[in-house]
Length: 282
Ligand code: GLU
Image (cartoon, rainbow, N blue to C red; front, side, top):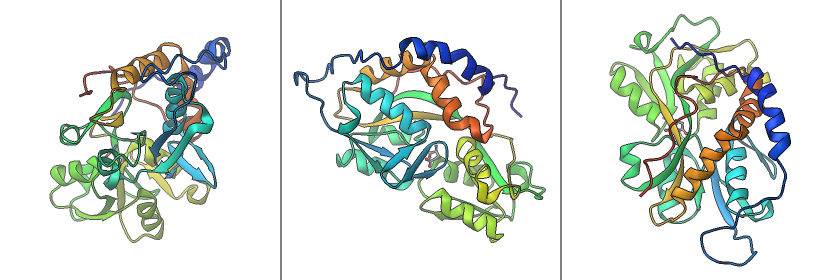
């Protein structure tokens, strides 16, 4: 059970003034990373495209908390909006997209883990979520202890799949490539539960097409530290850490959270947010 007092509505009110005071001032810092005078260097950013509130693609437009954090970071790196190309970074492909330089950075509910740090580096964390369960509104499942023998869905290569297999060896885990595929199975009644970060689950539960049908259990059983994934060769990691710290310090992060997760009534864990940024570069 979480005790949390981090209220999004209050935050929204508290941060509006801050943002009004410092937003849109055009005070882009110099890019710092390479002496291209005045020019904005193109940036390809990996995001999720099917996670409401976090990363969503609708035609040419991208939205969500991760997308907004990416835009704010890019702006402070001196990259103009027109020079950002968003690209899908599905969970099982993230390390590969970075190590093969298909993307420059990833903002995609990407948890920092020791295993992933063998291949990539992370700025951040910029947000901490927790693993939870999404079930039918009338389900009796109240936590991982009720999953034995149940059919559970998650995504290949996610911390969610790994954690739950360790926690509940008796679960029947079905792994897909994207969480939105799991939600469809859950709504159809072909699986008993979907497990991943509570942020992602809150977004699905709040979607109009599932109104009243699904519920987030609300009993988190992990800490998911969202980092900015970077190729190990990138020299921007520390600079991004400073930018992320600034986004928390000036209220921008709280505004981004409220703008994107407020609609799903998501309450971040106040014990873990704001996170301690740093320590995962290199
Ligand atoms: N944050 C977890 C992870 O990075 C689950 C969400 C996701 O797959 O993006 O594995």
